[in-house]
Image (cartoon, rainbow, N blue to C red; front, side):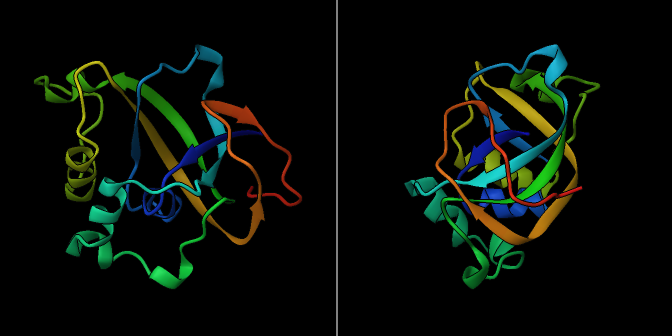
Length: 145
């Protein structure tokens, strides 16, 4: 199954459905949409740590539940749009307040793309695995369907 590595706390927020988007510098191909796994990266950045201190993020997460270096859930990849399209009169995706805060913390650039997701599932178990760049194939020991 295809897997996307995302930094915490954003991986957890995606898997509980609190955020429905993620920024990427690359575009996903037309045949790639559908169910994908979410891998919580081992890495953290200054913006990740800043996000964890925001009240709108703190209200959604339990620090003791944040796992790193593991597949923690699954989402449905539904779209890939340029970030510029979010500011058009009829945007294909309207970010909520938490997503706007995440986009600001990520220091969004005009050349980036917004991946959109639905049908989030936080797994009851985690599968520890090594991350790779982009969307990569992995074989979890259990199903998120």
